[in-house]
Amino acid sequence: MSRLRNLIERFKGKRVVVFGDLVADVFVYGEISRISREAPVLVLNHKETQIVPGGGANAIHNLWALGANPLPVGVLGDDAEGQVLLQYFSGLGIDTSGIRVSKSYRTPAKMRILAGAVHSQRQQIVRLDSGGPIQDDKIRTGIERKLRSAARNAHALLVSDYGYGLVTPQIVSRIPLKGIPATIDSRFALQSFPRMTAATPNEPEVEAALGISIGNDAGKLESAGRTLLRNLKHEALLITRGKEGMALFEPGRKTVHIPVHGTGEIADVTGAGDTVIATFTVALAAGGSFHDAARLANCAGGIVVMKHGTRPVTHEELTQAVPEDAS
Image (cartoon, rainbow, N blue to C red; front, side, top):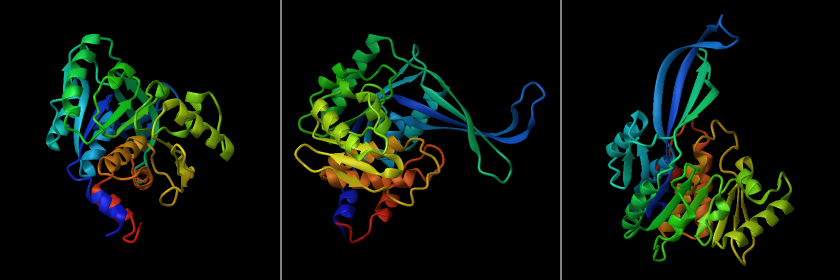
């Protein structure tokens, strides 16, 4: 068995705490009927509605699918979307004791409406976001207690910050990690989370954090990666670059550029960042190097963008994507 496949086998049972924003991804599918007489818009015949884990909840789903034992810590609203996510996790056997249900909070939801003809691929035509943010400090205080308890026997911590107000640098900095890897994916405040193990931003997030434009300039990418790594004081920085693959930065080591896994043809990027950080984190929890963790995260990212909707990558899919002789 190759080293990478052996590493994937060691994913099984790893306890990974996921502290973050739990989002409901809602997909409303419709079949095009006609053009409305009320306005120049499509009239759709509703076919089905799916609610699946998104945001930090998608990272949890991916960890479970990869064979790990995710320990969610977060907040859901006392609403339909929150109940669906709770039931979804419970049905998978995931411990939900770290999730608080609050009547004063509305579960963040991203509703995507997709339309198509009978035999055609359905396309997203609009997205409607709702829910959040958290404004009650008492909720954060209670969640911090749950986080401390969950982290006590964990193999890793994954922080997923989508900007809904639950995740703060203060809470993260107070968690005793006892040498376990701690990763961060922050949509809007990456540089507020220094001295963790690693971060996995995409290129636009790096550009926003540093106020620059990278484009196709390899020199700017190198400069941006090194600057952000120094600012964060992390042990590694993995920048995802879409069809250009990934770039791994470590202090004192040459940057590693990892070509995109697969054909580079993309069906749907929804949730790909969650898959990447979940795979990267559990690989570190299983004892993998940053390079090996990045290679597996790259494989997982290449698999998930070929799927429609928010869906995880499974242990079997990732194993099959790694050649038997991969070293």
